[in-house]
Amino acid sequence: MQRVREIIENAGSGMVATSVDGQPRVRPMAFVMLEDGRLWSSTYRQSGKVRELEQNARVEVCFVDSSKCHVRVEGVVSLEGGPDQKRRLLELNPRVRRHFPDENDPKFVHVEIVPTRIRWKGMGFCEYTEVSVPAASVNR
Image (cartoon, rainbow, N blue to C red; front, top):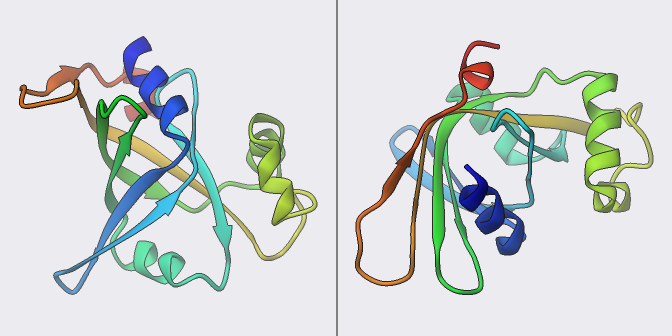
């Protein structure tokens, strides 16, 4: 799991894939990874991705670091984070304050991905290494 964290931190952002009516949609988002493997981010309430995630909460995120190693995280999204989670996200990722001044901003949506599968691989043509998904993140 440590290698996964390193790749995610080095990548800076990941490409989030959603699917609406069979049409894949991909966009970059910055995430922080919690101790238990969950990924946290933020978005605006009026963002199209909020409607997409409400229709289909299953996503995959791909992170690619500067050495071309990458991590793929499959999971299920929750948009239910309240003021406590938003406040903690603002502490973990101060850049979120560029968009939302505090946890009470009505436009602020807390995005949480609970991983169901995590894989990583090094640069080049090699196979993925499966990473055990921490039970704490799945059983929340």
